[in-house]
Each structure stands twice: as C-alpha cells, then as structure tokens.
Image (cartoon, rainbow, N blue to C red):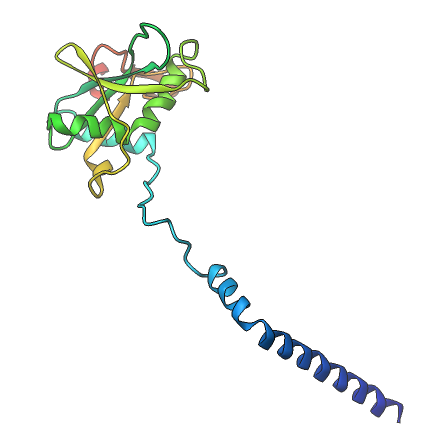
Length: 197
C-alpha cells in the first residue's frame, strides 16, 4: 500500500507541474514568442549595414607583394589631428591590383586600421593611443588626405595591399632566415626578400 501511495503522489505532482506549466505557457504565449525569436538560433540584425571584415596584416602584406612588380607602390602616412603644423609620419606603402590612382584613397581607407596600428608601433613617441589621426598617401611629392569611408566594392580588400616600414623591435614587415633579419623596408623604397640575397 505504501508503494502505491508514493507512485500516486509522484504521478499527481507531475500532472500538477505539467498543468501549471501549460497554463503559464498559454497565458503568456504572445510574450514568449518574441523572446524565442530573438535568441537561440535567431539571426541578429545588423541594421542593414554590411560589417567589414577585419584585415590581417600578414595577408595584406602578401597581397602587396603579389602586386608590387606590376603596380605603383605609393607611400602612406599618418598625422596627428589637432596639433599645429603636424607633420606626416611615413608608415609604409600601398598598392592596388588595377594600378588606378582613384583606388588609392579607398585602399588607404580600407586598410586604415592596419596602418594606424603600425604607425603607433613605429612612432610611439609621436602618436599615443588616445590621439586622433588622419591617413594620407603621397603622390607627386605632396600628401593627399584619404577620406575615412566605410563602403567599398565587394571583396575590395583582395585587390589591395600594404607593406609597412620594417620594425625590428616587433618583427613586423621584416624578412627572416634562421632567426636573423635578412631585409626590411626602411622607408626609402619597397623591400622584397630577393633584394638582399
């Protein structure tokens, strides 16, 4: 008899729990529907904007090397905003697959995070983490400011490249063999690994 009453008690509590669960679900069905769609597998909206992929320095450096012999390699730099007579600080070079001057501003703008990071690495006394900077490129011995735009042709990053001035302290943009630096871009002209053999 004791066994039957325990089973009966357990069965009645399950039905009561299920009944309460069903009742609470029916009462707030419209409220829970919106929540279910917002999480657990539902895609989050981006507000209609395409999110740009984060560029990788090594990947852009490889692309720069692919286009270096066929295209114009243009010097890029940054300068600190808000300072009187701020000088342009050379950071490296950019190029484009199509070798068009009108693509240079977009190439600098698309790679501005890589350029800014490398500028802070190369010029730590001139650029602090809090400084606002502007990007530019040098054509015909004069600096041209690149606009900071966020809309680019599809897969544009695959048609552009960046090579920074070599930084032996961090190892960025240096060619190594057996743990020793073979060559690096010193800021005078683009470097490549074959030039120092």
